[in-house]
Image (cartoon, rainbow, N blue to C red; front, side):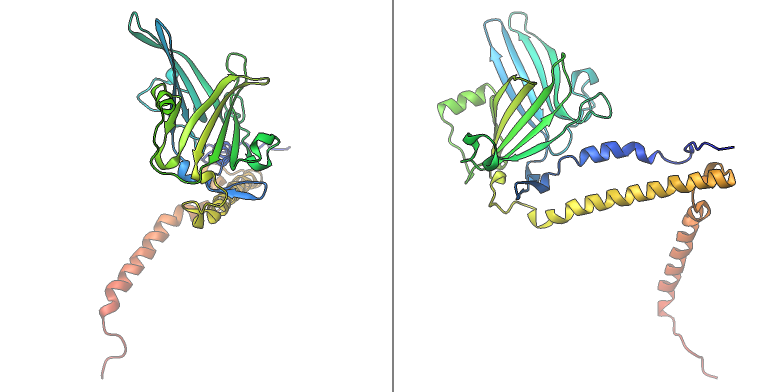
Length: 310
């Protein structure tokens, strides 16, 4: 009779966190590579918010775009779940409509434009990097930088996509705003992130295969000849991340395979399923005895050794 194996309840569900872990590794900001060129965009990590405001006689439509392309956007605990994008979102749009006559503001739409949803509500991030100088578009070949394309989920029966163009600016410093710049800042079409550069909304409209948000991020970190902050240690971080992942998967496979053998060969249950369970349970006592030995050695270090005189 063949016995079927069921994962024991006492073991942690190790493989349940692997999808989210590999999703988080989908964009490695400190090791962006395309066409033989390397960028370190880690200094741009963190949430960034851009506003787009459209006003008419009686209403104001305010669209808030939140982006964090290195990691996922955090979900504030004080905000109701139905008023924010789902977990795994990297680019989120929230539309609010204000009735100027009644002075009432309400959320009219929440759109997860880009994110990793393949293991929850459907839709993979599918990030793609493109070096501008090697782009198929002839207009990009004289520009320096890199372009990131990310996908989201279907909203109102329509696919969503975000395209962020990181454009190199040779020198950054204090920016003198022109009248046009001031107008953009007034209505939220651009945001100045200081040393991180300036983010502009190029467009957010229907295209042939999806509704696409196009952003342009002017920053010195998009330059190909810049020694980016933290670049000296960035090379080891990617290797270290994958090393930890491989070790984790190896340990998980060992525990699961060992538990399967103990179940089928010895009909083990509970803790007895775990390979070397006795040793694992003895670890606290082994550690306690080792610490006691170390303390005794340190405390006895000042005593005089050797033979006593007769």
